[in-house]
Amino acid sequence: MSADYRILHERAFVADLHCDTILWMQNGRDISVRNADGHVDIPRLAEGGVNLQVFACFVAPQTPTELCAATIDRRLDVLTSEFAHNSDAIAACTNAAGAEEIVADGRIAAVIGIENGEAIAGSLNNLAHFHGRGVRYMTLTHGVSHDWCISSGDKQPAFRGLTDFGRKVVRRMNELGMIVDVSHISVEAVEEVLEVSRDPVIASHSCAHALCPHNRNLTDDQIKAIADGGGMIGINFCRDFLSAENAAVTEKHFRDHIPELEALDKLTHDEHDKAEFERGREALKPFLKTWAGYYKGVCPSLTDVVDHILHIANVAGADHVGLGSDYDGIFFPPEGLEDCSKMPNVTRELLSRGCPEEDIVKILGGNFMRVFRKVCDR
Ligand SMILES: [Zn+2]
Image (cartoon, rainbow, N blue to C red):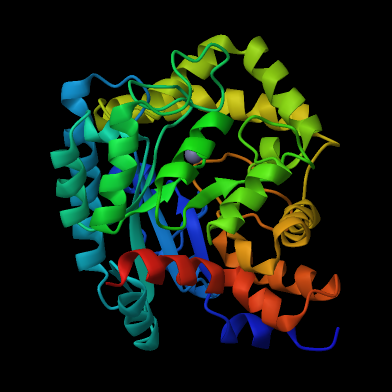
């Protein structure tokens, strides 16, 4: 290896475009200390050399409309107060220049995103409200279609990709300076977003369909189209999106364990008290244990993540790929990337595969910063 990977990793601006850590923070995780479980906290971000972390605020599909905006507001309250408590180590930013200042100050820059357009409850005023509270990207759906956008898993879409209102949402995001995130949405919806958006878009946490034909992944044509618009893709560390073999294992496990799956579903909903969250967590333990058992022998690793990165770099160029771990939203990260402290391993693996240093720096965070600056620094 020509250069020491740690020096290169330290020198690079490292950005992770997606984690679901807010769910755990809301239920008591103290991010100021190193936790024995989960994937993201301040000590591990620092150890992993992560300079910018996007915290996605999720609203579960089909949440009653009147509860959607309040759910996001509660999550934003938690983030605001946790960042205030830990202001010596982390601070929220709303543009690339702000992120660079925070990092120059020796702290971690936090960007706030929304996962699932249902959050705005069909209101452009809510969209502006969330922008006002610092939200800088929004994933248009989660795993289920809604009133104005079709999700990637929908086998019987009620309309093509976006409705007229969906197109208005994209235009309004452009006006406000909020990045459109096309992870989770259908092929047609991606096409329509790219037609409408005058700004580059991201897929914050998706992988390459050519390597793993999952509906959450992007085909080579989609990757090229996102790149043509100046956008980029953050590679997801979820096993099911990295390896088709793993997706089959998960599907079988889910089929065999419906009651536990329902507990899991409950756990990801906001409308519970702490006791219910703890009960859900307990109910999940055997589920996770048997799930891990199913995975024996078919475990993706760091090398699979880097395969997906290099595939996108080959198809669209090294300017259009980055990292979107989905930490704390996935249960079983790949070997070698067990939590955010392991991020330097990506740099090591890219170097060992002969990826040029200037490309590695772009992949680790430069590409996201380009889009962040273009959309949000104005
Ligand atoms: Zn997601």
